[in-house]
Length: 211
Image (cartoon, rainbow, N blue to C red; front, side):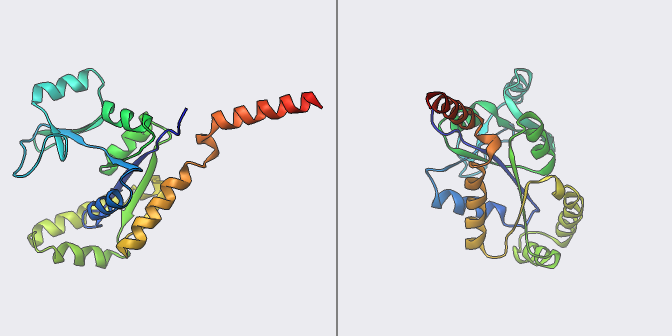
C-alpha cells in the first residue's frame, strides 16, 4: 500500500497572504499537493470555471449533499452555502497527495472533529500593524470594510491556539518552504505510521524466534 496523503487545513486572517501562499505552494510542488475545491450555491463570477474555483451547485443539490453526509464541513454566508465535498478529498488522499483545505476557523475545527488526524496550520503576518498595512495597501476596500476585517481578526486570534502550527508570513519564499517542511515532516509522525510499526515489531519478534 502506498503512502496516504495528509489533510492539512490552512486558515489565517484576511490579509495574511494565505491565498498567494497556497498558489505558490501548488506551483512549486504540483505532484505533492492538491487544493481542495469547495462546493457553493453562489453563481459563477466572470472567468470562474466549474471544478477549478468551485463546484457550482443549486440550493437543492447542495441540501441533498448535506442530507447524504457528502460534505466534510459546510457553512452558510449571506444566503449562499459553501462546503467541502468529501469524495474529492478522499480520492486525492488515497492517491497519496497531501490535500490542502483553505477555510476559516469554525470550519477548520469541524474538520478536526470529523478527521482527528487533520493537520491545522494558521497563517499570520508578523505584526498587527503589518496586517492593517496590507489591508490598506490592497486599495480595494473602504476604511469601514478594513475596520470590520480587523475586528474579525481580533475574534479569530482567539482560536489560534487550537492550531498545530503557526506560520508567520513575513517573506513569501521562506513561508512556502516552512509550510512544505511542516507538512512533509508530519508523514514521519509515529501516530501516522501505526502499520509500519506493527509490521517491524512482528518481524523483529520472528527474527528473535530464529535465534
